[in-house]
Amino acid sequence: MPQNTIDLSGTDPVSWRGLLNLERQVTSYKIQSRSDIFFSPGYTPPVSWRGPMVFTIHDLIHIDVQEESSLFKTLYYNAVVRPSMSRAQRVLTVSEYSRQRLLEWSGVSPEQVVVVGNGVDATFSPEGAVHRPGYPYILYVRNTKPHKNVAELLRAFALMNMSDVRLLLSGVADDDTRHEALRLGILERIVFTGRIPEADLPAYYRGAAVVTMPSLYEGFGLPPLEGMACGVPVVVSDSTSLPEVVGDAGLLIDPRSAESVADGLTRALSDTALRQQMRERGLERAKLFKWDDVADRVRRVLGEQYT
Image (cartoon, rainbow, N blue to C red; front, side):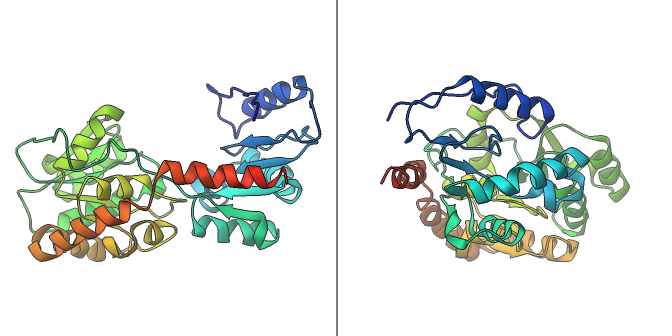
């Protein structure tokens, strides 16, 4: 089908600038026929579009997580996103957890919100270069936002009796994390990688003894999926979308309990039989998440609007 692309790169879609940029481009595009559909893979329903519409909401983090909210975002979701959900032909999302939250929040009918999922790139596999720093490490691919729950992970790491293991944190060495690690006496065992280039990320996964994500909120959570695809045991939160991502292939922990996090990580590091089982199950689990399948589901939803 013919396509016209609206480029929103360089602007946050959930901002005044992003909203105005979207509306400017939408209003400049003339609807060619009654079958024209607006489709967005992100949080960008246009107010001015009067044709059929399908858009994607990955999660409600801007509503559910206080640190991610703001007056503008609250107004945007209530004045733009929620009415657009009722007006749209379909709303796509990435997990059943997000679907249920969207239904609760919006009040739209259940068939209105469709899970299309996420996929894992073929570069994430057991074969390839391996990051070998000379010590076993736990890898957390994260940012510095509070819901990533790094402070609780540090407290858990301090409880673990494994002095040879390092904790690798992707991203910047923020002051709060450094100060907490120093207070706990574990700063010398924390490695801040800086931003890991996308091309190097599979090697970091392959070299890890465990991949963890003790996050308090995730609409999906790609790092555990990428870790499983690389054949590495994963330890994740027992909340939001993460249990449905890892299934029976990962260990679930209470992200608000340092003791629970420490116990899960210790088991995943020290139990040889469990590690092998998690590796095998993780590889099989990762095969269920293919971008081609995601594209087919999106294509199917869009195609239904033409029938």
